[in-house]
Image (cartoon, rainbow, N blue to C red; front, side):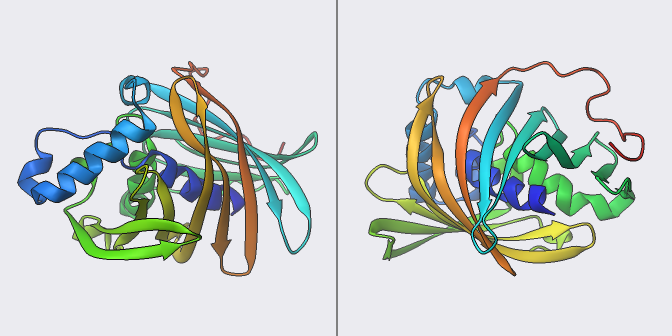
Amino acid sequence: MEQMKILILLIAMMSAWTLSAREAELNPPEVKTILQKMSAAVDPSRKLASASSIMVQIQNVIESKGVKSQLNACFVNPDKYRADTKMGVFQLESRGFNGQTFWKKTAAGSVPKLSGPAVEPMRFLVMFMHPGARFDKIFTKIVWDKKKYKLNNFDCAMLTCYPPPELNLPPYIVYVDRNNWFIRRTEITAPEFGRNMKVVTDFYNYGTCDGVNLPVEYTVYFPGATIKSKTTGMLLNVKPAADFFEVPASGF
């Protein structure tokens, strides 16, 4: 379950970085301008937009328990995904999507799988995160609330982003810093193997890695726990093994 929560963290990190010409047909000019500013702020050299894959390393601490873990997440266009969580040298969990089947492998040895129409909301999240992801290809509508919001001492604008209606997902709420156009908060309902959970993420500090400005300190709030996270590394255009995203054998 933890890796789906961290997937939501990464979604916010990647979501608004690229645009296409069709954006103007979907949303008013002021929304297009905001997305352009967000793209330029995070990916000024367009390295991320042109990448075929990305790997991110994250350290997590569950505040109430003081439990520390490490997450490696890899995404390859158009829709392959894998995330591995460790506590020290011990493998806790792996998750992946090979384009057709979602799977989860745990230390207990189980490998639950999900395929067919039920995977589409989860596929939406994975595609949302991929390098080159475009708002105009993901959301059916984006609305800018012209009020000013104060969040954690940041002056923010709010965007309400509507997923395709057939996915039956509520809107994604994104708060953007009006001064530097970095994302400061996301409010997302995330599917998790047949159920949904509300996840709120606050982003505090950003840092530069290989020309990309990405969040390096952030906090995730979800039902039952709070996770403090730090991004410790990012690699673009990685080339995993051919079977890296396939459903594994049971157990570690």
